[in-house]
Amino acid sequence: MSKKPTSLYVCQQCGAQHPRWGGQCSACGAWNTLVEEYQETIPKGLKLSGKEPVLDMVSLDGNFALPPRKVSHIQEFDRVCGGGLVPGSVLLVGGTPGIGKSTILLQIMAKLSKDYSCLYVSGEEGVEQVTLRAGRLHVEKSHLKLASSTNLSSILQTLNQKDGPEIVVIDSIQTMYLDSLESAPGSVAQVRSSAHELIRVAKKRNCIVILVGHVTKDGSIAGPKVLEHMVDTVLYFEGDQNHQFRILRSVKNRFGPTDEIGVFEMRQEGLMEVANPSAVFLENRQPNTPGSAVFAGIEGTRPVLVEIQSLVAPSPFAAPKRTTLGWDVGRLSMIIAVLEARFGIPFSGKDVYLNIAGGLKITEPAADLAVAASLLSSLANQALPEQTVIFGEVGLSGEVRAVSQKDARLKEAKKLGFEAAFLPQPNKKNEQSGITEKPFSSLQELITLFEGLQREGRS
Image (cartoon, rainbow, N blue to C red; front, side):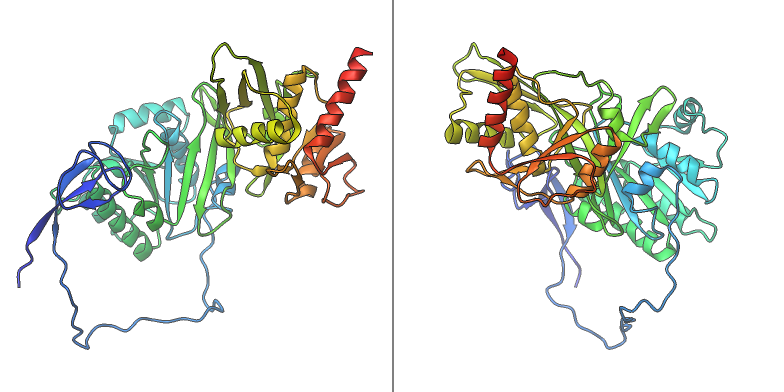
């Protein structure tokens, strides 16, 4: 029986399917994102003939040789990938326009081309434009091959060759199209089908495919959410274009730790890796500044020290502002509410501005104590003790909760010359850290500390 094509309206934001057109997607709430697409009907049942091949099953003891990872020798990138690229894997790299996705991938592929056959396929630029960028990055003498195409059939035919490339970059997946689909490039059906075909070839030939993905205005990768589930690794390239630092963050990795970061610095000659991010983030820190606190955080497996800056100022409006850069504004509101409700610290009628210096985004709850200390320091116009790092989670009753990897945080602080640490009470003291530990069990102890500092300042 012939299959009849059916018409569905698919949301280009989240991939939800609707039987008829509507102004707003009922799944994600986006407006004017429903596009008509034709799809083949799927048979209700599948009859087996008995001639289908049986699956090859293996045990979990690993009685087969695993191929070695392909190392780019760009340590920050290899760290985020878990030690290098795994043959047969598919990576998805997303980021805002102009953040440096194409630049860093061109540099990485140029490094990899010294040892492996590599191909860079651009669907957004011509070969001449990519060559101009390669000259600016001083990688024009590498063995990397370039191509400009949006026809996925031609790309798949190239990858299926006997001497096909071992590593290929597709820039970007939203520009690719399959002739067998009637929808336009960038649509949900085209992105999903194109990614599926590239993943199938990568697993079959054991080659590495790196996909570049556009992002929406809220920062998530454009296209169907299933795209992130299909690939092996998802990397986000973060950073403020007004800052010189860029953060490559792993949010999914089947072959390594998640939430690992790599730090790069944007220069005229390209993106250069930063070997010691903590020293760089604290490089321009001003001593004895009210509202400044140094947070000892953990990003993936790496301890990172960053400066948290806050400013508490009288507000001319009835509803004061709560503005954050690099931290969750909801978390800031929670800390302010705890200080007001539990300890009577007044923030009503005051604007609060919070900034993570260097453009880094922090999601770790261990920054709560450092944020509270920064707010109290700005409110009292009293600087925190010099050479002191702070970390700890704050609960709704004002208690300070323990956090993980205390030793790694203190070791990084000691390496950069810090002498003291404000940390949660439940953590056991480590006499080998070489840092004076000041434990806190409640924010009341931190408030008492500032009251003592103010009395000393007046005397």
